[in-house]
Image (cartoon, rainbow, N blue to C red; front, side, top):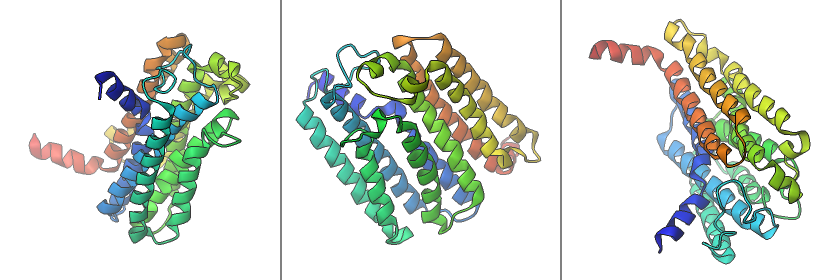
Length: 303
């Protein structure tokens, strides 16, 4: 395989966006660990399933946007593999279905931990992974991409990862799922913010096309504060270290927001990666808040 083709396949997975599937699983597992009920086998399967399902959706988006004329050689964002001619449409479709099948196989392993009732949940996830870009009513083209991301990268990813380990749902985990849902929306907002003119020309009615960039950037900013508020119980601990953790995240979030509103066109491409990185930072801070006392004890022993 040529190096250029290999790079095209890697880019087709859209690695910058993958924290949106990994971070919710890590956070939910941290909640399970904090509650004393982690099941590491289930956690690993959830992580693999989430990443594979997102890769399948990303590849499907590459293929179906090409078929529907959504991607052209005038694209402002990173060039897509199919429209560039580096990967044939047939090869991309086969790869999409193969990765989705792999995700389903991994998902079946979760039945051992969470019961047969997980099968409908997995089926819905697989269906919407394709429905995001495919079918007679692709969700991403009709202003429903943000809702889909919120549900599947937030509510479902966090709550059901916790469920297969703890066997129940809890309010703190539900609030965390809202936080991860809105932060995952931010990744999509950056993508659609950058591509507004191109999406409008191809009749792709994203929320940015429908309501404009000022609405999108304000929504982006507010989502960071919503995420902090939803995880408020974590930050209200006795340690001063824990109290300043959300400030660290918000400082990074506001800095990225300012860059989002000051750049345009291809200059916005790095902001997608920065937004994904902010999600990872948020997750790291959540873990730090949960296990602050243990971390302080370890530091004391080391120092």
